[in-house]
Image (cartoon, rainbow, N blue to C red):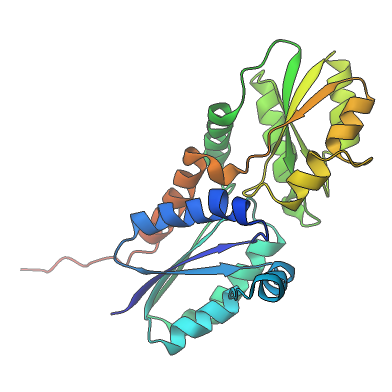
Length: 268
């Protein structure tokens, strides 16, 4: 039986970010599933079009890769999402996978990074592994993407957990709550003199480079510095963190285990 491993991410058009984050996660998953042929898919149609036009590189979207696997005769397919939350992007993947459910003998989809309480605990541990040493008047500010989907609450949940544990980390989001204004207000209330800025995203791509670390008037770095606080960007995606990569491997393994058919014992 032909078996496949598909890794689906939002994607990136930055080659260095692709190598350090997405390809690093893909390689980790491929090592965990050496008996499966590897395939890649992106959910961002904008990035897919850009790579096609700029570099002549074609990347399948989730539906295209499933159709290609069906036509190539694959019967056993496991898929891991590299998305952070159970938001719009993951729901689209889930719906597309479900539409192909009857086309394969086995079709499984692993959950995104933050899907249960244990995931939050593991993410906090992974951030501690990646974070710089901080003085009493310093903080690590983590920039999440945010979402219009109700799963945007994951960012506030993570921030609250860190606060409850007296960790010097603050979570904000580009496109939802907690906004940068509330982040800055908290930093001022805590008399913070310096922050390190790091993306709470798989890839340190456009948001990290432009919205977080640039000298543009509305970047997080600029806005924090305007408040009189020194801001030093750390342009590293979560995909560079080995503990994060292992979480994705574990999620796919857990999905396989949960969906493994029961073997009935033979009655003598």
